[in-house]
Length: 261
Ligand code: UDP
Image 1 (spheres, protein in one colour):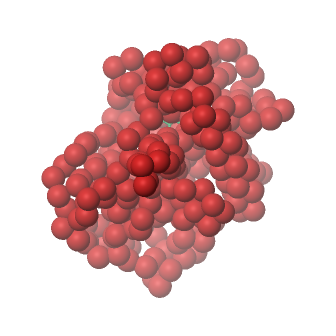
Image 2: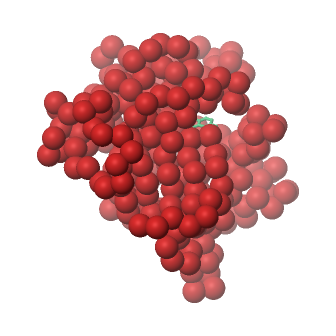
């Protein structure tokens, strides 16, 4: 599929104009960043794995009635998506306290929360994505009260579904980040789940060993990043037990069915 012009380049993805009006191509890069861009590296094969894992999760969410921007995966690194007007808020859902929550509030790492906690941060790299209150979102018209209610309900449904999905393969869903956007459908605004859901945007711990299977391996220099992401893909049944990302040819434009490897 022919790509149009580059619309946006982020830390881990590039968005190109899509083949039809209202569509875009989301390209997953191997770049990894942390601590608001202070730590940067390239992790070979990460984009391929995140593309597959995010496709799998968004497709499953779609099947339980959650509307997402994903139209279809095009190849190893790209997805065809609907263009949305991104709401400039990161919705963080937490089941277990870790990361910035423990640092900011002195909560013991690993504390199990009595119910899922939803936090908001303002999507602004220059300001370091600061934690904000619902009142900020309403005051600055980043979303309406009605939109927020809808999004919160979606966050909880997504959390319930994903917790079950990961639990079933021996993984604890500790926390994750979601982004939502608007599209105009028959003169009505509709909210869609956007961006990606992958080990870059979730914290995933092995149920028994509590081994980290997510981007904390990069943030904390724990090594074996790709192996951890592959492990997540394998457990979700996306990659065949014996498949290894190093066996996959990088950069090929055609989709590769890893299950057949
Ligand atoms: N997260 C993300 N992008 C961000 C910030 C957070 O995907 O810009 C994810 C992160 O991977 C984790 C969850 O949101 O799964 C909560 O992150 P936290 O607020 O603890 O931030 P961190 O400790 O990463 O600064």
